[in-house]
Length: 236
Image 1 (cartoon, rainbow, N blue to C red):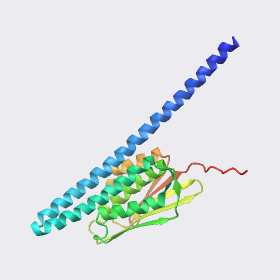
Image 2 (cartoon, rainbow, N blue to C red; image 1 turned 60 degrees about the vertical axis):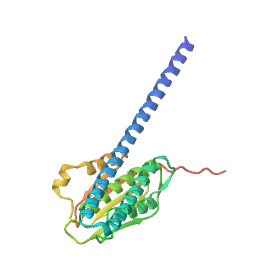
Image 3 (cartoon, rainbow, N blue to C red; image 1 turned 120 degrees about the horizontal axis):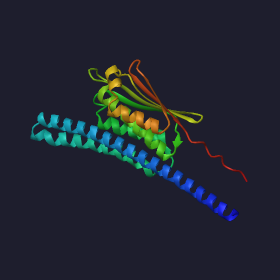
Image 4 (cartoon, one colour; image 1 turned 45 degrees about the vertical axis):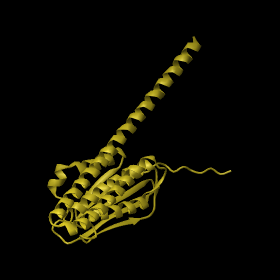
């Protein structure tokens, strides 16, 4: 009888283990689907902007200038491709220096969205923080979406400004702030919660992070991510 009880207990433990494992796999699949949707949105919205820019430039030029126009657009599309590769590549990497990733990302976004020609500075500040690849990809996607939206919409009707990506760590919390000194986020935009803002909220929620939006002298998005516990190295 005791042998049967032990066997039943072992079977129950194995069932519980498998259920937990399946739940973890489902959560991982859902997370990857969310990241893919974010990447698809990033690619689609920016590519549409580049296509519109190309069409406008070609309408204004004749054959001698068309080649230069196409070359300029090619450079912008290449910069966009670098952004997408940066984001997509984080899924399979080991620990990532997030500040270095944000610097590269900011440069590529600025190139792709004409920041210099529009007199918009894109700055990255803070201290280097090495985080797991999954967290780096989530944070980079959020930063990319917010910075790209700021570059597209925050400076309409004005000659320029600044977009900042700021990173810092406080204990077990990673703080990311994406802010601009543009025209500010309207009540209508905030209430509509469009695809870009919805993705930011969803990614933050999925990562267990908190999102705070401040609308003073521009717009600032502050995301606080919980960090995994540091492993203590054992001594001999």
